[in-house]
Image (cartoon, rainbow, N blue to C red; front, side, top):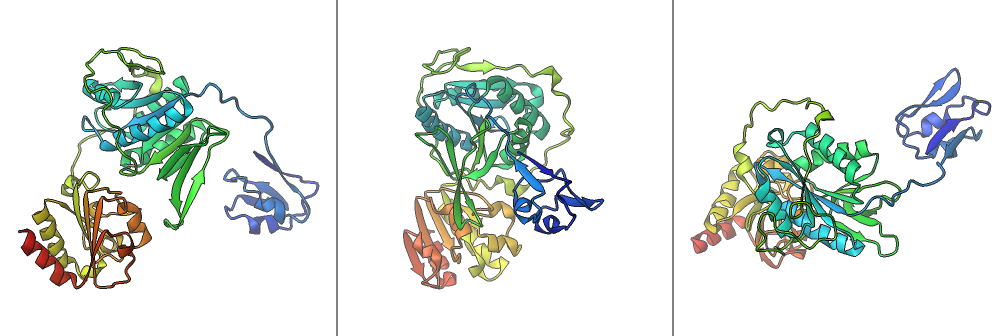
Amino acid sequence: MNIKILNKKCNGCGLCLKSCLFDAIELINKKAKIKENCNFCGVCVDACPAEAIVLEKKAGRKDLSAYKGVWTFAENRGGKLAKVSFELLGEGKKLATSLGESLSAVLFGYHTTSNCQELLKRGADQVYVVDDPSLKDFRDDPYVKLLSYLVSQYKPAILLAPATYQGRSFSPKVAARLHTGLTADCTGLKIDPQTKLLYQTRPTFGGNLLATIICENYRPQMATVRPKIFEEASIIHPHLSPGASLPSRGRNEEGGVIKVPLPKNLGKSRVNLVKILKNKEENINLADAEIIVSGGRGLGEPKKFSLIFDLAKVLGGVVGASRAAVDSDWIPYAHQVGQTGKTVRPRLYIACGISGAIQHLAGMQTSEVIIAINKDPDAPIFKVANYGIVGDLFEVIPALIKKFS
């Protein structure tokens, strides 16, 4: 799009400045001028009484026929694949099948052979891998440059990345470099049968609404996906050995592994990794936990979280928390479950003193079994719970601990 001011018509009234929500218009010599941060929303066009502002849509449409296939980014943490990588593969396979195109995984790291084989076993038609000592640990700059380079070279139609600290860091920058759109924190993906466009659904307005977004004129169609939203891809080729060939709709090199050398012209990273310091809270793996016991504001004070820890210990689970408890500094953020925390999908989720705000439900309602403990019989948490205990949690939890012990 393009927007311009017709100086002969502009009378310098300033109404367009007042209408602009982005402060993207200024007056110079009593004439309006559009600044660089304009997002072409068109509000000023309607506000101008002199019809001196014109919003032009560029004619024609970019040829997108060269873009084919679905790519998923395989997140590598300390040499091991994160489980969200398999979740993206599972959903990516459905999208690729709907399009009748190939599914590829993209992997950056060092000594990646076993991880490549794991991705192929779980249904990737091919794996684009860059294996280099400089990629052993995550750094933003190299990932952005590499992924942008690969997409420019091989032109996938769809690119999915995890909505983790890694994916949320580099994905927007990749989208900006490729001049395409990005839908963040998706909870639903599907291919429209008529247009073949990717329909990307995400919560908005604090989780009160679901927005479905399309990227019609640019490629790739990019989305980050929250962990624990989709099922992991199952193992399709259990006996696959290194070098074995795979049935594939796409191209195969070395049994499905396409090795891409690290380009020499990418430049140096602006960040030197000196040392990795692990917070003790990082050992809390909420996303992969089978049993989670969460506490909320109903506990009344931080020291009462000891009850939650005791119950979790007896059950062999981990401790979660609501945003209210985290915001009150009762427990570190690493324990937070919900839309602004971790999305979890355990076999058993016990919510203690949590009312059930929609933001919290968005992060745990797909749990296999949910038990709610709350003294308020009308608490929203009971609407999603499989079992509910209406009572004083300071009586109920000690009784549960005693029984399970």
